[in-house]
Length: 328
View: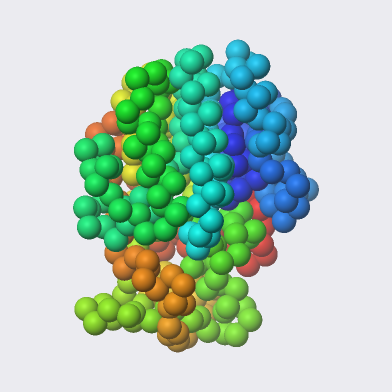
């Protein structure tokens, strides 16, 4: 069986959909906090056609996994606390760091391949660039407890002597796409743009608070979630030939927030109307003005599929999912 933790979440539920479409309908075990009704529609909404073999609550999974490891062939560990504004380090220690160590140790002890979610938040302000080289991990300076927890796990992984037969830590950049309806403030700017346009006919973007960057010209590497799950499945299918390690998951092409907003308006058939507001003070000092994934390592490992352009990704997301709030 294939385990997917965080399966009610954004990327996890999309991965279930993608694997189902490829024929995995009787061999998926999903793990999450199934008491969060706001997320349940990602797996259970009628018409989505998702199939899983078994549901296990995250609080019970580690013990279950220790006892039933023989039934598991592969683990996608995507579950985590992902709120970048959360300041309670204890939450990240428990849900992001220790929980991930427990899964790693079981996979390593019983030769089970593992793909886990790291994050581009580990790169901090980008002082050391955006290379997924293992040599820079100890020098990275994340800007919030979430990023610290992800980088701490990456650092821990790299000093382990006992490892799974294949492992990959995926440094997700700015992922957008269907099934992020539950994320609230942490949802993508495309999501918030469409919501604001529906409500007001215009979009408010964060004003630049740096003299060298114009309003709306903050740059990020945005990647469509369908490309993300393609990479996950490719790693699953090629685990015997791909080198283990940390891998960036972006497009390698950064775009501005203005590009993003304008393309969202166009996908909705509207003329762009953009206003600028101050970046909230609680995130202003840790707000990234530039991210761009170095994708050479994944390409060198053999991944050849092109990534969706920002225009094509937004068009698919808005027209086929966001406007009617459809689940994928």
